[in-house]
Structures are given as C-alpha cells and as structure tokens.
Image (tube, rainbow, N blue to C red):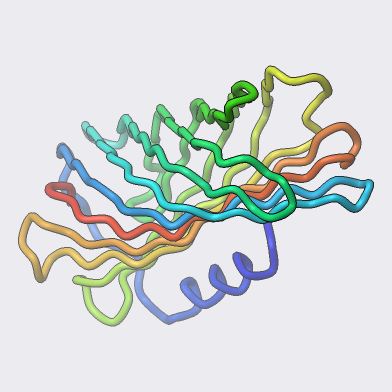
Length: 216
C-alpha cells in the first residue's frame, strides 16, 4: 500500500463520523462506473513504463442477513507510451463472499481475475484474496466513507516466474439517503504486485465514479 492510500485512509477514518447503525437485513444493489486507470511497471534493471486510460464497469451485491455476495466487472484500455509499451486492454472481474461481523465491518473472501491483453498475447492473473471493509457515516447519514484493504493469500499468473506479494486497498465516499434508492460514489483504489524477488513490480491505480440503485 502506497503512502497516498495510507494518507487517504487516515483522513476518512479520522473525520469523526459514527459507526453505521442497523442496516436492512436483505437487499439487492446494482451499479455502473466510469474509471480512470493508470498502470505502472518497474523492473530491477531500471526499465519502466507508465500508461493510463479509461474503463467502464458494473457491479452487483446481494445480501441476506449478515451474508452477501459481491460481483463486479470492468474493462478498459491503456494507451501506448514513448518507451515502447504497447496499447493494451485491461479486464478485471471478481466474486466475493462477504460476512458482516458488525454493521460497519465486513470480511470478504474470494477471487479476482485480471487480464492484460496486447497484440503479443494475454497475461492472466488470479488473486485469491481476503479483504477487510470498514464504513462510517460522515457529517450526516447521507454521506459515508469507507476504507478497504486486501491481501492475496495466493496468486496465479500464466507467465514465467512467481508472485512474491500482491495487496492493495481502496478509500471512497458514498452519497445515498438524500437520493432515495439511488446512490453516487467516488473511490480511489490501488493494487501492488511484486514478482520474481521484486525483479518486476506492477501497480494499478483507479479513480472510479459510480452510480447505482438499491442497497441499504
């Protein structure tokens, strides 16, 4: 997790909000997002690339009591850069089982799959991960802040080598009750993976703007 994520997480959790109260036991929520993504790759040799692009996504959550299923998918493209990195498509999807230990705290386990598609071929990743999601009301019940961190218990990649570590997190704000069943969300997330004894380090950042229906 980078310094930017740590600073943002501290800001959200230190705003003095209160823990969310009782939540509706059963609900369905769907959403759509527009994302700005940035992909950075650095090698121990000193070579690097830094490319950016945009993506569109969709998500859905089904909750019954303290247990929920969270599904999501997004797809986008990052441009080529002067260093020679090719234009590539980035595709990501996840399926997570969520258990709400407290109204404000959720534990998520499941898989996230990601593909980087270039004319030369496709690199596929699968992250088997555990996540912690904390959420608090800020200023009034209509605005909520959240912090989520994750760590990959196991990572599979179809290229040569091994993944030493993969982890990341997200912080965001959601506006809901003032809009009835509709909600708006802005979130910033960052993932960091290191391969082959840190010979290669890959970081994916995303700034997402979402609109959705349903939920709490």
